[in-house]
Length: 333
Image (cartoon, rainbow, N blue to C red):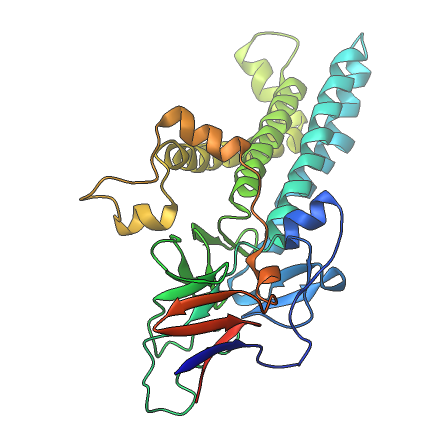
């Protein structure tokens, strides 16, 4: 039997190569998408995919928490410090640092949201042979009836475990080196956007710390008396509110970043750690602390595999030949 990977839907609905800037190459790997993939929808002229997961997303709260406190800090906390300071160096430095971390945080947040996380072509080989269309896997959607065991990577049929991949329930896609689904960014975190996610955490930590320190400077009284501190906090409610909010953010984000820093150090994903994948055996991906961090920081972001699926010259051997010309797997007589 010959198995053909064919495009389901519009005849010209697959991704096509396109040139673009570095950010575009990061987001879509140079591909232009014209159709939905699982619960991902093409945006920005098809140059990026955005997950339509409103019921599982808290992105609007993320933007509010990222933007509102720094704006309050820049508008209501830094100017009074400038009025009280004999030098412009301190308020200018505080405002500049807060602004730079705000820009950095927004950049990496958008990068994580719009970067295709590493969606793989699914081969549902455990379907019932006698059922009509049983080898058809609609786009990347997981119908829940069959366990996905294999994916197609560069024309080769690969076991899903070899790619450390997993079907993401929220996005209905199989994600390469799946880490977790993050509601705060509204996207699955996988091989292609994990580094941006970590940089987003670092940026949010820096933003929270800079706003927190600015609030402390604003609240600090001129006299080192206990009652002076109480009076000062009562006189500056905005700075006090920013201090408490960013203190909570620092405590939670420090724990989250420390957890992921530990995972990077041992070359393990959140999914693998939660399942205990390497509990009873050695992790073959662990190359040591230094090598793991070097791999994380220095290796180039891999291109999207979606742009490769349209190359009809990719052939593989798995009981029969497979021709990669689209997204889905179907048995042909």
